[in-house]
Image (tube, rainbow, N blue to C red):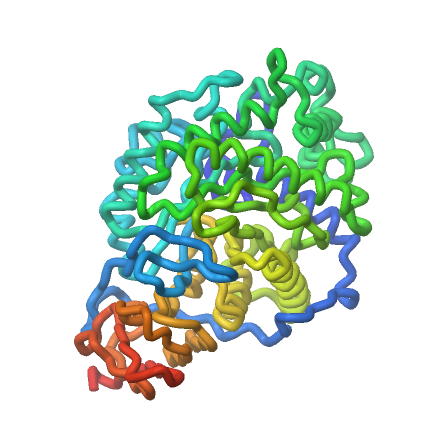
Amino acid sequence: MAELVDQEGSVRARSVTGSRSPRLRRRAVRRVVAGLTVLGSVAVVAVACATPPDLVALADPGGPVTVAAPDVIGPMRVRGGDLIDGAGRTVLMHGVNSVAKWEPWVTPVDAPDGFGRDTLGPDDLAALDRDGYNAVRLGVWPAALMPAPGQVDQEYLDRVAVTVDALSEHGIWVLLDLHQDVFHGMPEWATTPAAAALSAEADPGLAAAIGWSAAYFSPRSLKQWDDWWANAEVAPGLGVVDAYAQGAAALADRFDSDPAVIGLELINEPFPGSPALQCLIGDCPDLDATVGARNAQISAAIRASAPEMPLWWEQETLFPNFTDATPPQPDVPPTADGRQVVSSFHIYCLGTDSGKPELPDPTSQAYCDAQISQGVNRGLIVGRSWGAPAVMTEFGASNSPLNSTLTTRMADEQLFSWFHWHHGTYPSVVESQLVRTYAQATAGTPLEQRFEPSTGSFTFRYRPDPSVEAPTSIVVPQRVYPDGYRVEVSGGTVTSAPNSGRLTVLADGIGEVMVRVTRSADGV
């Protein structure tokens, strides 16, 4: 059986019928709908387009800068538009996705025979520490979690717990992600008999234009998602979303008391179904309302079992690259700290899907800059409209480093968290663009963050909160500073050792604090 690599870098075996990865389908769909996206019509409000930074190559591990484990103090809570740790500090996450789309259906800490992919074992955790990551978006496979309506596989939950425990013990924030791709990963029972009876083949004309990936718009796929949004019955008196919500509630209940678990993402990238074309050529407010209603339905079940669990909501999968959204305010049972809802969004530039390990031509760069800027802007607007954090939980699934240079720069400028797709997948020229100096935990309000990869220069400003006793914690990756670093602080005092991989600062008072980090020359 030949292997293929999908758009998110997941190696999957081709089936005997020749079916392809659903993520590849999404990539091809994006190519089709690219024709509907006019570069000149892109409207960017909050994020300005700019020339991408030069590519950088990181030094080999070693040198005077020490490696520090993530500075994680749980539990994580939502306060307005910020994520707040157990010490009251404002948290930024630089994370990776880790989603196993084959047995054992969750990334193991020690790979079983034939697994064929990176694990989250000691070497992986050490590499995450070295390069300054502090979070993992861990895929949980709905088909493995919920083998039958109303039934939860406790042995599978045990396997998930082994990986979560390893990450938790290491001090890594964990986002539990109920992951599917165009219904791949959903339980068989979630496909109604009416959908199963339909063809999985797409329109011949569309198939001729884009090949096998046209199955994204097959009658079966469209019906599967229409049934999802309609909560079609899959067992006597039980709708598909009702049954799914039971499994989500069991997952949340299992990890509700784990201080490293920062929440549960309700469903990865739900497709619009029949309204897809309407969404692409304009807005689909009725679908936006339905998405909100289904998310609320799942959230209510979760809160009944895990009253304090933060909930991460996504819009339909064409948002924010190709559609805008006007989602209603999240309707959820509140926790003791309010709604505790995070807006999750994904950004990809179809102009560099797959790609080469080099910057593309200037036209592609300009196109991606505009498309990514528009998507980021839309994602942040939803978060602001909810009074909630907006987090980019997927981006960069390409051998081209452009996706990483653009999105990480925008994240610095707009001070939002991110999770790159996918752990251990892409060439070093891509991975190198992700290793950045940044403020992991701020004892106050972050105001500005700038990092220049080519020089290692970093500037950070924040307004201190006198009620927070823990220091501001800044990751200084070893491979960015092969000869060490110098630090200058105004309004505060450095409390960490020279060349520590975790630079800590205490404010001198209530005035603004400015931190500057630059490379040393020959360790001076």
